[in-house]
Length: 247
Image (cartoon, rainbow, N blue to C red):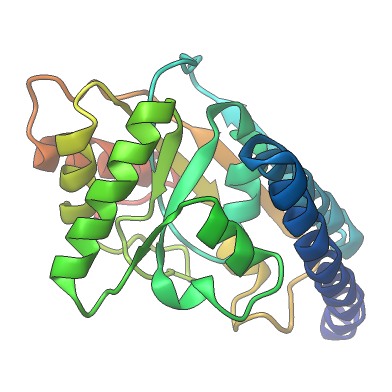
């Protein structure tokens, strides 16, 4: 019976999600070309609000909490575990006051209505995972952009999704490059729970009645610490929150 419910509610949500992508692709183009980057960013935030709110259509729940307040007006590097594509809408909406920008693989910058356009004009870091030189150059450009504008960066050091929820080892390279160009940035770990359980086998079927959450943990001041130490601290906090041992 649960599978039947999953297919019905999942189908309804994906229809809703697809319509949002098409509608907000147009909204983003209009916002960016007529009103500029700030209006475009607002349209992206509203787009992701609708994505997150729509999760309730599947009987699922979403929640967000902060262990401590995070200062605004300062560049923040959010380090998050990665379970699913649904990690991202929650981060964009719940952390919107920090204007999060993503480090993403370049393949996502083409062919996905609403999402690819945002990655391109929103100046995300679009990296080629098979070309380390290009990846470093792109992250350096991205770091300069967020530092100058007091935006935030979001990076998934696991590199690929862990649909089981078990943490994969956190890589240091991307974080180290960001810290090099943003020496005054604050690093904040983000623990994402159960988005992988929501779509364990790809985009369909979705698992209804899933409780998903996003939680920011204790900020890490990188001054006087190596990137390896900073990433290890974040990995340990996220693993502890999820009831796991670091990978």
